[in-house]
Amino acid sequence: MTRQADIPLDPPQEGVWSFEGLPQAVQVAGRQFRRTESGTPKPGVIGQYREDKSTNSTHLYVHADGRWAITHLDEFNPDKGRVLEHFVTDVIAQRVADRYAARPAFGYIRVYHGTQKHKLGAIRSKGLVSGRGYEHPKWFMVAEDFRSAADHAKGYEGEPVVVEFRIPSEGKERGGKLRKMWDGFPYLWAPQNINWEGSGATRWWALRQAVSASFIRGVHDLD
Image (cartoon, rainbow, N blue to C red; front, side, top):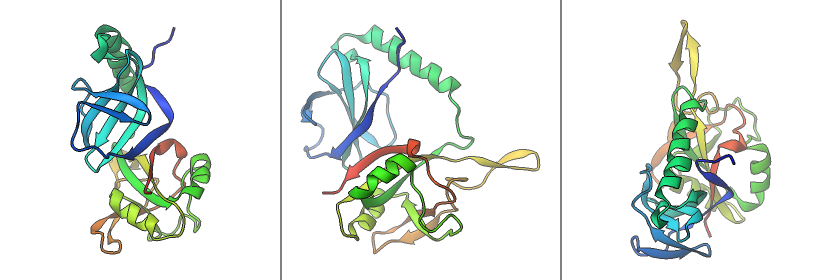
C-alpha cells in the first residue's frame, strides 16, 4: 500500500482561535485535540495540536495572528506511541517528496485576497482572475497583510472572507542567467506599499495573470 507524508484535507478547515493561550487539550471543529511538541516548527505558527486518536489524526496549527487551521491528517500519531510508523510514512516520505518536487527559483510568498463568500465558488474553480484584465499594475487585488485584506473585504456588502494564497516567485532569463525580478513574479506586478483605510502600510499586488486555484491555502471567515 502506498504511504503518504501528509494526507491533505480538501477543503482545509480554518477559524478564529478563541481559547486563552494554548491549553493542553481543546475541542475544535467537533474533534478532540491535545497539544504536541513533536510537530515540525512552521513560520508564523505558535502552537500545534494532534487529534486525540492513534491513526488518521488531524493536525491543527495555531497562528500568531489568532487563526487556527487544519490542513492535513497524519496516518500515524507519534504522541500515541506510533513513533516509528510516523517517522517512516511522514518524516522520511516528506523528505523524499521535498527533494524531488519542482520548486520555484526564488521561493514562495503568502498573500491574502479579501472578498465575499458568494464569490468563492468561482475562485475555487477558475482561480483568482482580474475583471479589468492584466495590464493594470495599480489594480491591487492581494495584500501581504491578512488584516488589510480583511478590512478591504468588510468594506463591501455581503459575507466577508479572506482567501489565502501561496504563490511561487520565479525568475527571468537575462544574459544567460536566471535573475530574480520581484516577489510574486510572473503572476503579480511589482508590489507597492499602500495604506488601506488607515490599516497601516503594507505591500499590495495587482495581477499579471490569473492566479491558479491550486495556490489556495485557506479560506478565512470574518463573521
